[in-house]
Image (cartoon, helix red, strand yellow):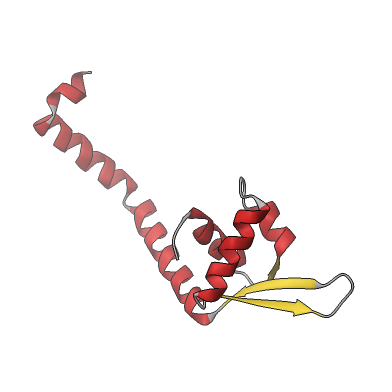
Length: 107
């Protein structure tokens, strides 16, 4: 699993089953072809389950597996950590640049 589309699909599908068109609307900039290929790869990786309901027209839903839900949880923890430490990291970078790269600070 790689790529920004995979992560965006994980985030969009985390709350529960979601239809293809809902995914397409919620992920800005993704083409239908790229969404289809990414969903197929996520399904192949065991991260997404595709369910086709026998209706006319067919209703197709995608849902995260337990493993993907665990991955999503880890991504949320990482995102939360980054947000909590954003100011600290910016200050550390500024201090480093002042000491080691003064030509960038004055520019």
